Length: 358
Image: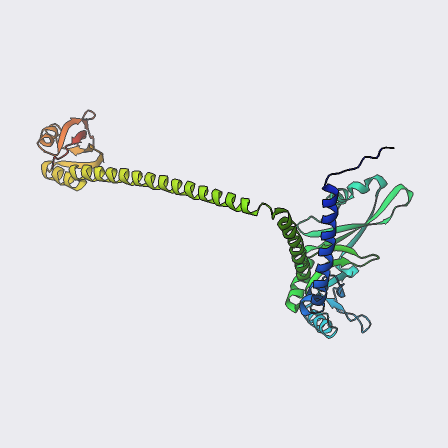
């Protein structure tokens, strides 16, 4: 009878890896054992302990038999903090259990087949048949009975401003809340909050996972460390060369743009120096036009100009304006018209500004 055997090294490697992970887990547990008895260890293990449960109602109450009780008022939360401190639980996150006077309980019946989509069904039912909406209220459900092919579901509805009030009162009293539940058997969780203990636990889980990943990567990558270093150096050098080329291209482009901008500014300055100013044209027109002329409009766009107004006699204006060295191409834009009120002539004259050579 022949028996096939696997002569490859994979089973040996798998067994070696399993032994290594088992050894590493035991070593890590031994290293953490002394730490758990210290202050830091108590902080790490605090997340696994169940904090105090605080019963909350609208009005003050509670007895010595139930010391962890509070109401929606600041003095009650201050007293609760004092009681938690006396019990050594002031640093532990607490679970707030709401009494029935803080929420609305609504019982409805649904088909048994609706269990898979009960979240959506309850949301639609609450929004359609009640005045509550997700902006003003928070609701959760729990199944009370499954008999008779129907689901008897209780929906607990809580106003969101009550949640904000509870969180504000707890924050002012120095109490950290881990979750808010509704009274019942079992209690219905309405809101789960991330506490400092949760964040620490998540942090150390990530540290532990990172440590394991680092050990595995170091074990698997020991043979290729030198090659990876050379590859990384080559990639870094190539990146530096590419970056230097990109920087040089940007500098060259910026220099070309600066030179072009300088040439444009210089051309504009020369053009501005050669073009007559608006004040100079106005002074020349004022000195040339006779006293019986009134200008109502003057426009200059580039080298093109235009004046409009009234004159006792508009015909001689062309000849007078042609005597000015700053103007050329003087002509009427439209026919001269007579103003019926004072018998003056209305004119509209265009001209071209002469550019000086200096």
